[in-house]
Amino acid sequence: MLSIYEFTDYCKYLYSWIESHESKSYGIKSQIANSLRVSSSFISQVLKGKKIFTSDQTSDLADFLSLTEMESEYLHLMVELSRAGSHRYKEKLQRRIKKYQAQARKIGNRVPRNKELNDEQRAIYYSSWLYTGIRNLSALPEIKNINALSKYLNTDPEVINKIIRFLIQNGLCIEEGGNISPGPASIHIDKDSPFVNKHHQNWRIKSIQKMDNKKDNDLFFTGPMSLSYEAYDEILKLLPSYIQNIIQIVGPSKSEMVACLNIDWFEY
Image (cartoon, rainbow, N blue to C red):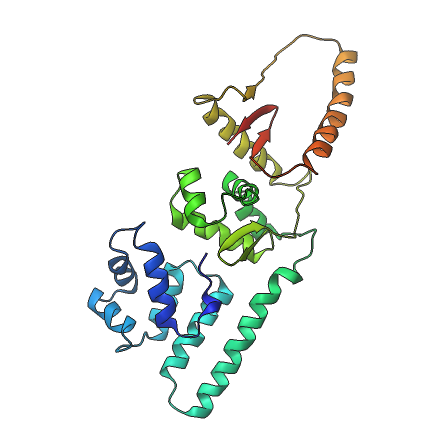
């Protein structure tokens, strides 16, 4: 994934971003121009260094690129650097840029392993199965970038990019050399959480969708039954131990595929 912190020239960053998206999105320059309410020729002039974005246009560009708040501030710094006149002011901006670059490199190391998302972050994370799905998929050696994830999930690269940025920002994924991997942070949703039902529903819906195209190694079990209270309590006691056994099997195993247990057991 293209990292904005690898650049100090916003024109080069924008050119590289466009180049990495042109094959997947027709007329990407026109889309940027429309978003900024300028002409396509203006965008071309900016890329050639003949024009400079205003602060408002820079803000609109950050929104179009789905940048985080920190990335957006960094973009503004680069634009301001290109506009700066005095040598002293340029040096001041360059020092700030270096601080942002250093901060970006440290983010992965600063995120605690047991990550506590706030309610706003939880609402985003549990809004779609894609957040946990993409995080799990990033552990697979053959699925390490936006293009691979987009192709595997048959989902728009821009949607994938937005989710990955959220995961990286919160330490749930890391990006190194353009490759995405699971991050150091881990999260747990409590049974009393207001988001737990949404989490279950996301994966139940995915399970239902998967039933229409199930594979031989997928298992879908639905077993309405009549039984005694005693038998019900006995099964209820067995299930947590069964789930714990599954977790102990999964933990040390290699990341070769992704799956979900409801109890519907399917590869997604």
